[in-house]
Length: 524
Image (cartoon, rainbow, N blue to C red; front, side, top):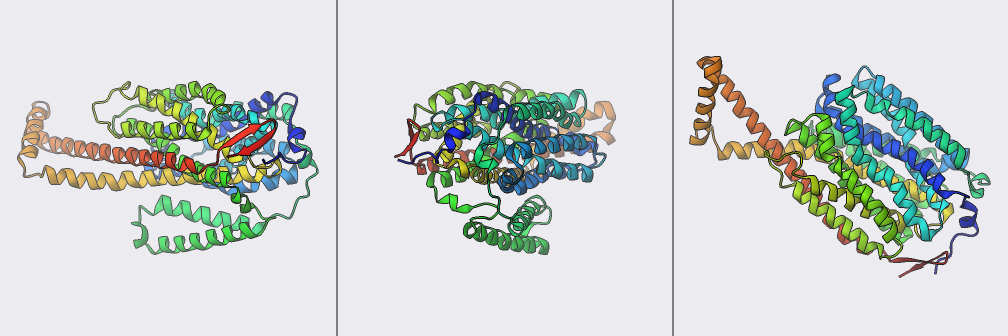
């Protein structure tokens, strides 16, 4: 038996923990919603600011990098300035940066504003999660995490619909302006309902670990630069990529060794000795990769391959939010009654099966073709996030919760960053591969190509004349070639995402089962 931390569990409880849950969920909802809204607006941002689609993805990845750098430091800032005060400052910074994102006249200024926004948003999730977990006793944390999951799971799946509507009806800039009223409400509720626990108020704060913070900035920055730009320069054939990877390996290794040995460092990696927490970190990283690929790629598929508008693409993927909303009360009720490893397995397997179905798409699908698998994906994700969080933190002391949630959310963000950049690279590489395969199967001198070209030429010549008909037919054939190649590259991405889901389902059983008995935690 592992007893709760000395006196801290009762001290952390407040009169109305559900109002605390709503208050911190608002901040998290705003922060995660912003990423999902921005994802569906990427083609419009690229067109408006004269950037390519790959450059537009920096709007997502630059945010995630700044977010990741601040995440581990959030616990120190909470102890130094007070958790409630620091949370309010972060919400205000995030909200102000959102305004400047919407008002940015160029991609460079937009990226600067996104970095500031990411710095403000970096602490929102770990602090909100720590406050929420401490506000409920261990036996009720499953239901509490179901509420918190609305910010993590529902926001990304509702975001594309809202973002698409704002983008088509007004402008992509309103995808950022929408954060302003939500941020104002979050500040009001946090100020009213959140209270710092005694151990925060009486904490003895060690000096800030400048070296670890610098190392963190170096390795996360190098990782993101390599992921974003490596494809353009053919990876290791470029000298700068080799040097960046070298700096990444050195700084990451140094950071890990220092964080393991220095208990008063930026983060304390000794907490990874807790088996359930270590397994939870591994799974949340894989989940970050998978969920961000799905959030980014599915709307992009409808827009880039099928020609949907942002709003139409958002409507098509919107039912995932309905699935998540339906799954939240179910998982909240089941989490305290059923072995969470079973729930996690069902969630990851369901996600993997739906990703395999996405991997069977073609150019003839309609808006409702994938309605059921999209909705089931949202339902499955609710069976993943809640049990991972509750099992990973079930045996973590309240005093260590800030450190734990910082590491936990850092790995989810790093996973998401890797997922987005990896999916973009795979799209480009596999599209070129499939283009070569199609050309080899239907060469220009072949009967299929010649017959199709003649048909297009004769049809177009009726309206444009023979001279224009030939060149227009060639252009149409090339457009179809690119469309088919891009279709197959999306299929590859979806199928690899399914493999991640099935792999995670197997790793779930590395967890030790956790049962709560009258305020104590039993491991089996």
